[in-house]
Image (cartoon, rainbow, N blue to C red; front, side, top):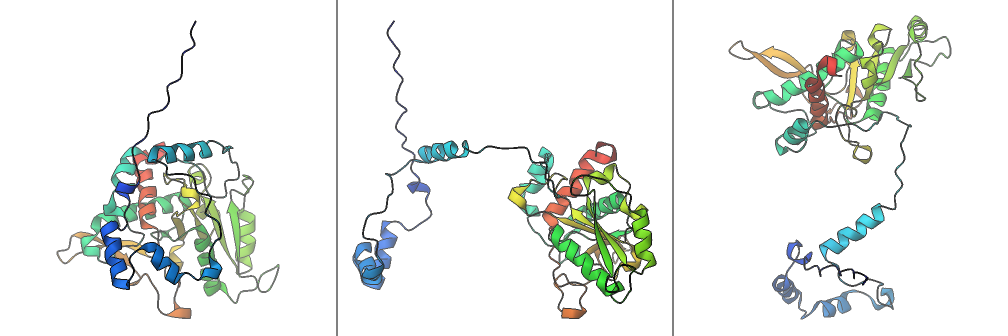
Length: 323
């Protein structure tokens, strides 16, 4: 039997050059004429000092087509070993529903990290953020939530800053300088603890308790607001937002109504317009970027509105039972 010869792959004619956004020969010649040189080599010889030049040619292979470059990158990527991660730490792989992916994440009309500056022309975006706030309040058991913060680390720092502003001078059984505590729920190793006694002791000493919670776990666990938490922070990435190699992701921040004047970030509220009809607006604060320095409730109030909208729509898409 005559062995079958393998056919050589067809020569790829697709070059990067036609799609490269750069100067063409005419543009290069025009620029060289302005600076007074007739070639790029002559220009480089005049500009680059001789003592810093490489004495040997660069080890660069020949020109590749786009398909060859993609094949090389694919072979390189196949060398990676993908292991299942159980570390967690607030991030987990998730599924973005196609309707949310196409209509929000891939829709430039939603592309902004900021809360709207003109409420009258952004009622749809404000309603989406109100849904997000409502979802956060329902899951955390708290009375008020903002329209997202930059990330979970920022939210945790904001919680401690807010706690210090409220309870800064309070004493505490463990240490006179302690004004608050930050606890993880569930813990980093996945354990779920009953913090009721801990919260009672903290409150008895005049300290506040902040809980860094896994938002999806609160679908099944007792909400922190039911067992004594004063502030609840965390990451809403698990609600349909791709991991994106670590970010960005919208942080949530929820607290009790009595602390609404100290909460960082923006809050979407329900009001009425000039005709008496229901309307949405930014409540309690007039600016997102605070300029009062040490008197400000926060100096870092950048939100993640696009990702907060996705998380809120993820909850709407699934519904309470689906979550």
